[in-house]
Length: 170
Image 1 (spheres, rainbow, N blue to C red):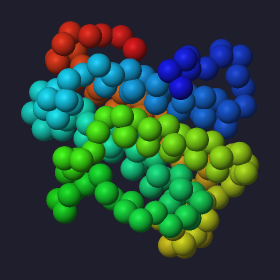
Image 2 (image 1 turned 90 degrees about the vertical axis):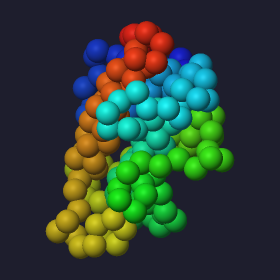
Image 3 (image 1 turned 180 degrees about the vertical axis):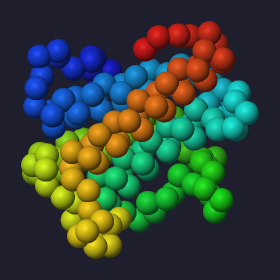
């Protein structure tokens, strides 16, 4: 997905617009971690303590929680696998940036697949993340929430990357 650019300015379909922006933000996040040495991927430069690799893993799990487990009510083996018992992001020693980038791309493809079978105003299926129908947000709400997560965390990754090596921009 490295050739993905910001969506066309003439897009009007809300679902396509959100999906295209999600694709673009995945690429932006991928560019931020590309080329970082393993020690920089696993080192925090921020008072909160998160590392670029932890943030990348969080995005993978976040998208699965909201789209696969949330909207589609599909079983997800470890929906909170990006967090420890206190809710802090975690990464195992065996997890690599390449594997997490591939997982992020796979999550994006799965999001598109699930969204392609639904209308923007369809509600999530009960039984996954949402226990009852009254708890179930619409596909539009979920895609917007996932997009704001990517946008916010891409901005945080901008700051982290600038602190690491001075790189700025997308």
